[in-house]
Image (cartoon, rainbow, N blue to C red; front, side, top):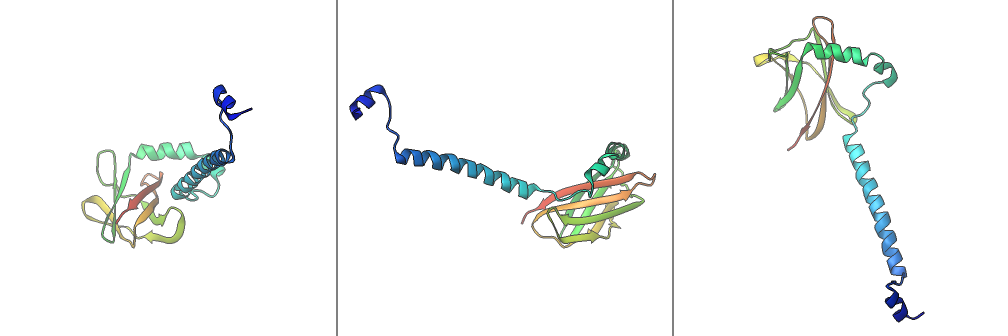
Length: 161
């Protein structure tokens, strides 16, 4: 069949270059999407939260409801090399738990973990000296309210230079 006959039927010739372009486009798209998904998975991975997710899940709802009933709101800020934790109740009054441990860490690495020593600061804040650099950080708060309610809170924040 001549090329004139093919052209009159509306068909196109499938050449090696066209097949190569199809394969490069198809596999390039697949590889690009996979790289994008892998980057997002690694850059947002929070690390291990609990040693046994099944055991922790058995009492999760009860602990969450008790903690929410406290009505505490926690926020974090930095002033130079000082971390400022603001912990307030529903009415905006400062809260000072019976116990409160604070661990400042990177979400995916333990190399820069810092156990913080919190002291009462001005205006109902809790402060601690820290050594931080650019990037994503997590403040893990664990403690006990004065009524015996367990308190856990993770606050993730990012420092940009």
